[in-house]
Amino acid sequence: MATENTGGSVEYIQHHLTNLSVGQGFWQLNIDTLIFSFLLGGLILFVAMKIGQNLRTETPGRFQNAVEGILEFVDNQVKDSFGGKAPALIAPLALTILIWVWLMNFMDLIPIDLLPAIAHGLGVPHLKVVPTTDLNTPLAMALVVFMLTVYYNLKVKGFGGYIKMFLFHPFGKFFIPVNIIMTLIEELAKPISLGLRLFGNMFAGELVFMLIALLTLGATVSASLLIWFPLQVVLDLAWLIFHILVISLQAFIFMVLTIVYLGMAHIDADSH
Amino acid sequence: MNINITLVAQIIAFVVLVWLVSKYLWTPLSALMEARRQKIADGLSASERGKHELKLAQERSAEMLRETKEKANDIVAQANSRANQILEDARVNAKAEAERIVAQASAEIDREVNRAKEALRTQVSAIAVTGAERILKREVTNKDHEAALADLIAHI
Image 1 (cartoon, rainbow over the protein chains, first blue to last red):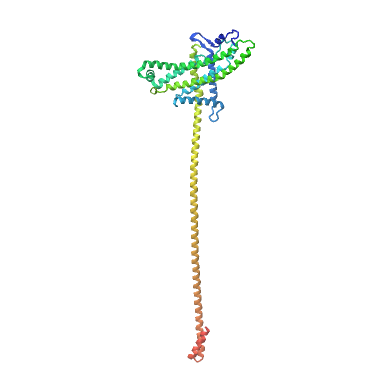
Image 2 (image 1 turned 135 degrees about the horizontal axis):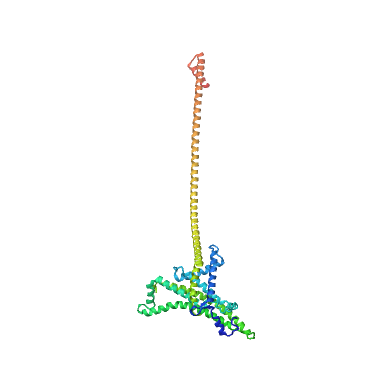
C-alpha cells in the first residue's frame, strides 16, 4: 500500500484525498482528474467512431444493438419530459452525461489502492482515480447545464418572460421582493444540488472503501488478521455490489435532472 | 477538493465531449434508427397494400369466372336451339322432298294409265273394226250386232 511505511489512518485517508496537481490556490490544476476524465471521454469517442464506421441498418451487431438500446432509452426520457419537441442538443447532452458520469463513477469500483500504488511505483506521489469525487467535475457539468437552462429560458420565454418569472413566480404580483429571492434561490439551488449530489455520493462511497481498507492497514501477520481479513473481504464485496447500484443511479439521476431542468426552461411563463 | 481552475478545464472538456458525442455517435446512429423505422413502416404498408391488391384480384377473378360460366351457358343454349332448328329444317325439307317425289310418282302413274288407256282405245277400235268386218261378212242384224257387241265386250 502506498502509505504503509508512513503509517496512520488519518494520513492514509488524507493521502487518498489529495489530487495530483500543479499550481497553487485557484490556479491549481488537478492532473489526475483531467487524465482520467479525458481517458474515459476518449474511450466513449473511440467506441462511438468504431460503431460509426460500420453502422448496419439490416443486421446490427450485438454492440450496436446495445448502444442503440441506450440511445433509445435516453431518447425516451427526453421525449417524456419535452413532449416530443426537444431541441437537437438535449438528447446527445443527456446521453453524454449518462455514459461519461457512469464511466467516471465506475472508476470507484477499481480496488482503491491499485492504481495509486502503481503510480507510486512509477514515482507519482498522489493519484485520485475517480474524477467525480473531485468537486470540479460534477460542478463543471452542473454549471454547463445551468447555463443551458438560462439560455433556453431566455430563448423560449424571451428576456421579459424570464424577468417575469423572477418577479411573479411563486406568490403572484403582490410579493415581488419575496418572489425575486425565492426564485433566485430556486434557480441557483438547481445546479448546486445537481453537482453536490453526485459529488457527495461518490465522495462518501470512496470514503467507505477507504474505511474498509483501513481494517488491515499496516497489519502484521498475526492471529487477529484471521478475523480482520475475511471481514474486510466480505465488507468490501458487499459495498462493491451496493456501489454498482449507486454509481448507476447517480449517473441516471444526473441525466434525468438535466433533462427535467432543461424541460422546465421550455415551459412557457404563463403555464407556471 | 477545492474549486479551482480544474473546473474551467472540465467545463471545456464537457462541452467538447458533448459536441463530439453528438457529432459522431448521436447523429449517425439516430439517423440510422430513423431510417430503419421508416423502412419497417414502408414494408408494413407495402404488405398491407399487397394484401388489399390480392383481395381485389381474387374478387376480379371470381367475377370473371362467373361471367365466363354465364357465357358458356349461353353458348350451349344457343347451340341447342340451333341444333333443334337444323333438325326441324331437315324434317321439313325431307317432308317436302317426299311429297314432291310422291307427286312425281303419282303423275307418272297417271301418265302410264293414260298411255295404257290410249293403247287400249286403239286396240278397242281395232277390235271394233275387226268385229265390224266380221259382222259385215254376215248379215248384219240387230241381233247379230248385239251378239257381236257382246262378243266384243267379252273380248275387251
